[in-house]
Length: 98
Image 1 (cartoon, helix red, strand yellow):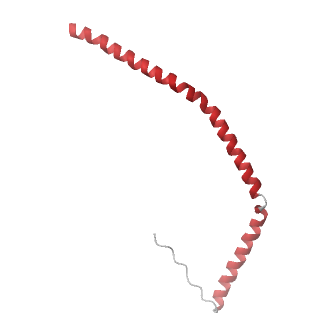
Image 2: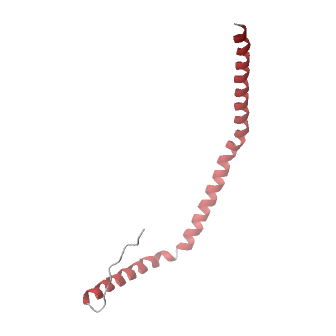
Image 3: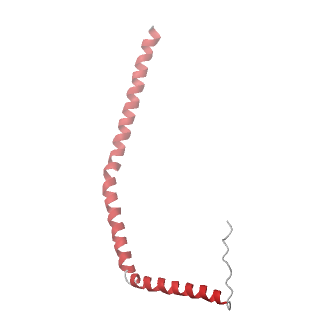
């Protein structure tokens, strides 16, 4: 029975050392965890600022987008109609090979 008694303190010491190591690890990571919300807030603010700037850049383009879309639709319709007339042969589109 003597060997078991001498082994028990070693196991307790091992558990104690593991517990202290885990505590130290947690204490080292605490400052990082505390800084995360502040850094996230700064990144979020910068992202919002960039999005606002992009919106301002795209604002003049927005009204023209509908005009461009309508012009393209009319052009496609005219090309399809000209293929029906026979004076312009429209080839069927092939799907690209993958």
